[in-house]
Image (cartoon, rainbow over all chains, first blue to last red; front, top):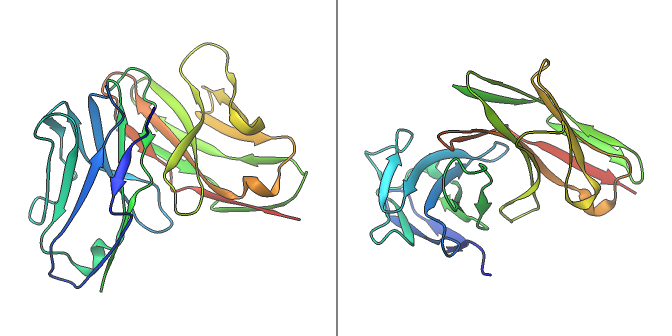
Length: 115
Length: 113
């Protein structure tokens, strides 16, 4: 069974440029998460989807960040425009159903460097 | 609200020595408890989890953890570490109803030969 797939693994951009990250969760997993991981810190939730509905986006900086999961499967996280402080690893995770056991299955992450 | 505190940011240890990575949590609701491991340039993978029942849980790679409700702790232990255990370890709690997970800031375990 394939795990959570993320792309790109690495991205370097100039500040003020846009960037997008893609995530394909494990087949059959209805709940999808985007986490932000700054250097030396644990993951912090940006947004959680139940199927195609964003059920928790309270930590998503909506002035520059957006996300979508149109068909309830794969998802895209976008930043426009990027700022220097956005340099971090963006992790995608999925689980079959939120609250089942709480275990998250993570992708390898997308490392963003903003110059 | 929930929070997780990992008491040691870095733990250096010699190969074959025992190790304990400490984790305290706070929550106003029932939680599940987890330890994840992150190797360089990889995502997090589950080491072990406590959902209910026996307070001593065993995970992969010889790790185990003990849930202590009165002290709100979930410390991770291994009796004899290997070089390959060098990694970042994250303690996490998850709300049993909402499925919202909160992570600690991690402990860097460095195993020296």
